[in-house]
Amino acid sequence: MSRSLDSRHSRIVNDMLGDAKSLASDAAAVALDQEQPQRAVELLEQGRGILLAQLAQYRTALDDLQDVSPGMAAEFTELSAQLEQSVTRNNVDGIDVELELGVSRPDAVGRHQNLSMRWKEIVNRIRGLSGFTTFLQPTPFHLLAPAADEGPVIIINVSTIRSDAIILQKGVEPDIVKLPDATYKEVKRMSSLMEQALGVSGSDECEEGIKMVLRLLWEFIVQFIVQRLEERGLPRSSRIWWCPTSASCLLPLHAAGIYQPDQPNLPDIYISSYTRTLSTLIRARNLEPHSAVRPSILAIGVPEPDGDDGTDVPLQFVDAELDRLMKHVPGTELLEGLGASHDAVVARLPTRPWIHIACHGHQDSTQPFQSRFRLQDKPLTLREVVRMNLPNAEFAFLSACNTATGDRNTPDEGLHLATGMQFSGFRGVVGTLWAMDDVDGPDVVDSFYKFLFRKKKDGKTGDYKEAAKGVSRFTKMLRSREGAREVPFERWVNFIHVGA
Image (cartoon, rainbow, N blue to C red; front, side, top):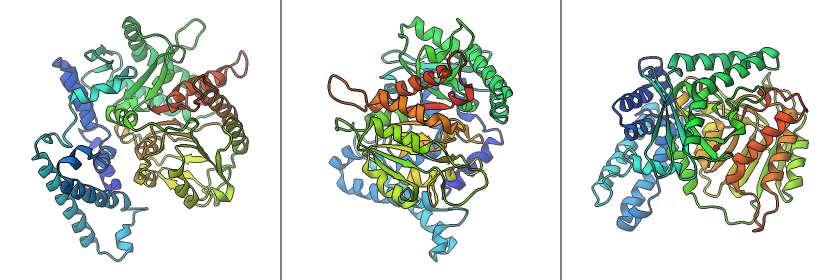
C-alpha cells in the first residue's frame, strides 16, 4: 500500500495515462449493457473518489461495534488514527516529516507497513463477529439509494463503451436515459473548449466559448434528463444533485442551456447541487443538525497576503464583502489582516458551524493536496483541511478562486478545496469552478445571506439546506444585474453548491 496521499495520487495519475483511465465508467457501462443498473451504480461508487474514501474508512462510526466488542472498537480506532496521521502528514513539499524528525526512510516505511497490516487484521477480526460480515465492504445499492431521499441524483456516466444518465429517485428503480451523442470523445472535446475559453478570460471569445459549451451540454445531455424528470412529475424549482463521472466532472452541467429568448436553460428549471459520490452525500445528511436558532459564523478576509507569488493582485472588495455579511449576520466573528494568520484560522475553525472565507484560492494541477487558501502569513492547504475533523461544522462559503476546480489528471477523485471542506465535516459548501471576479463578492454575499438569514415564522434563520437555493438566487441576480445586458457567463457560471 502506498504510504502517502501524494504517492497514491501519483499512482492513480499513472494508471490514467494507460488503459485504466476510465475503468469505473467502463465497468458501469458493461453493467448497463447487461441491464444491471443497480450494479452499475455500485461499481461507480467503488471505483471513484478512492483517495478520500480510503481516508473516510479511518473515521468509520463504531457505535454498534462498541456495544458488541469495546476492545476491538478501541483497537480499530487507535490504528485508524495512526494510519490517517501517517498517510496525511508525509511528503509535505516532497520531504518526509518523519525524516526531518530523525527517523530513517526504511524505518518510516516499515512502520507504515506494520500499521497497515495490523489495521487489515483488526478489520478481518471485526468481520468475523456476528452481524459485522460487511464491515467496510463495498456499499451495496440498497444502502446507496437513500442519497436520493431529498431529491433526484443524476449520475452522468461517460465511457468509451456508451454514455448514460442514471437517475436515482426515492422509492423507484434507477432510471436509465441513454445519451448516444455524449460520447467520451465529444465530452472530452467540450472540456477542451471550456479550457480554451477560460484561457482568454474576459474576452468575447471566452463568452462565446462558454456559451457554446452550455448549449452542447443542453443538446447532448441535459435536455433529455429534464424531459425525463418532468415526465416523472418533478416540479419546477425542485433541487437536483449532479454526480458526474470521467470527463464530465470538469463541465458546468448546472448551467446548461440555449440562452436565447424563449429557449430553455437549466438554472430556470431546477436548482442544482453536486456530489462527488453517493456516500459523500449520505454522510453529509446523516450528521446531526446544529440546534442553534441562528448559527454563528467565522468570517476570514485576506485581501493582500504577505509575500508575493507573482500572480495574486490585492483583492479590493474583500472589506465590502465582509461588511455585507455582517450587516445580515450581526455577531459574526471576524479574522482579517494580521488576525487572519494560518494558526489563528486553524485554531478558530472548530469553534463555529459556519465559515466564510474571502481570499485568494489556488488549485495545484500537479499536486492537488497542495491546493490552498492564501491566508495572511502562509497558506492553508488541502492536505491540512482533510486532516481536520470538525463534527460541529455545517456550511462553508469559499469566496475565492478555483475552490471547486478539480484535478484534470484525475477528475473522478474530485480533489479540490470544496470537497476537502466537506470531508472535514461541512455538510454543504459553495465554491467556484474557476476564478471569480472580486467585484462581484459584495453583491453575491448580500443576496446570499439576506436570503438565508431572513426572518421565518418559526424564528429560525440560517438553514444550510437552503444554500443551494441561495446560490440560485444570486446567480440570477448576477445575470440581470446590468439590466438588459447580462453579466458575462464567466462571472456567474463558476459558482456551484456541493453537498446537502
